[in-house]
Amino acid sequence: MLEDFQQISRFTLFAIGDSAVTVGSIAAALFIFIGALIVARIISLFMRRVRSATAQGRGMLYLVEKLLVYGVAVVGAVAAFSTLGLNLSALAVFAGALGLGLGLGLQGVVKEFVSGLVIIFDRLINLGDFIELENGRRGTVQEIGPRATRIRTNDNIFLLLPNSQLMEQMVVNWTMRDAVRRIHIPFFVAYGADKAKVRQAVLDAAHAVPFTLPDVGDRKAQVWLTGFGASSLNFELVVWPTLEACKRPAAMQAAYTWAIDDALRHACIEMPFPQQEIRVRGLFGREGDDALRALGHRPKGVEPPAPEPAPSLNDAAEDLQRPAVVEEEASAAT
Image (tube, rainbow, N blue to C red; front, top):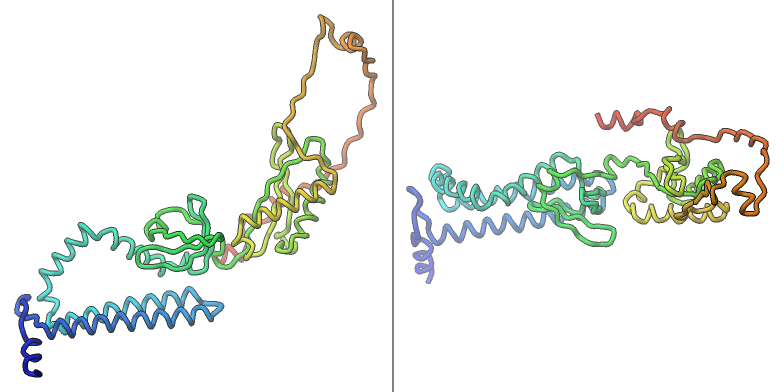
C-alpha cells in the first residue's frame, strides 16, 4: 500500500521547462498555500481583537494587519511554487501569459487592489473616520478591503464603494486629525424683527444644546445675517459642536433647528410666510390724499422722524478679524 502511494505521488502529470510536476508536489504545494491562508486569517482575527481593544493608533494597527496578511499570503504562494520544483526562470512563459490575462480580463481587480493599498499607506482615510461622498452619502469607514471599502451609515446601511472611486472622487473627511468642525444652520425670520433679540435668543438656544462646545477664543457660536429673502431675513447659526455630534450630521442639524424654533417662539419673534403687498397709487383718476378721502380715510399728517436704532453686534464682521485658518490646524496640515 505504501509503495503504491509513493508511486502515485511520484507520477508526473506535466512538465514546465525542465521541471516535472508530480501528484505529490501538487499536494504539498496546496497544503502549504492553504496553510498560509489559514495563518493569514488567524493573524487578521488577532489584529482585529487588538485593534478593537485599543483606543488610539487603530490606523497603524490596520496597516500592520494588512502588511502581515498580504505578506504571509505572498510567502505561502512563493513556497508553494518552490515545492512544485519550479523556479522563476521556468515560469517566464507562464508569467507572461498571466500578465496578458491580467491586462485583458483582470485589470479591474488589479486596479481596485492597488487603489486599496494606496489608501491604506496614504492614511488620509483611516478606519473609524466619518466621511462624506460626492453624492451626499455619509458614513463611518469600517474596512478597506482588497476590492472595495465598506462604509456604514448612521442608519446601519453598509455601502460598498470600489477603492478606485474613493481615490478619484472628492471625499470630505469630517473626523480627520480629530479636529472640531464649525457648521452653519440656516433659519429665517420675518421682516421687521429685532436683530439683536433674534441673535440673543438663538445663541441662548445653541448653548443650551448639550453637544455645543463652550465659547473659547475664536471658537464661539455666532449669528450671521446672510441675505434678504422675498419675505424673510435670512440668518445662519454658526456653531462649534463636538466631534461625536459631527459624526451624526442629520440629527445634529435637526436638534439645532428644533432649538432655534423653540427659542423664536418663546421670544415672540414672527416666523416668515409668503406674502404680497398691493399698493394703490390711483383711484378713479385721483391720487394721494384725494384718493384716501375718496376711500373714507383721513390723510396722514407729517410724522416726526423715527429715532435712529442703536447699532447691534455683528458677528460676521467680528469673525473676519480672526485668522482664516486656526494656527494649530495649519501647522498640523503642513
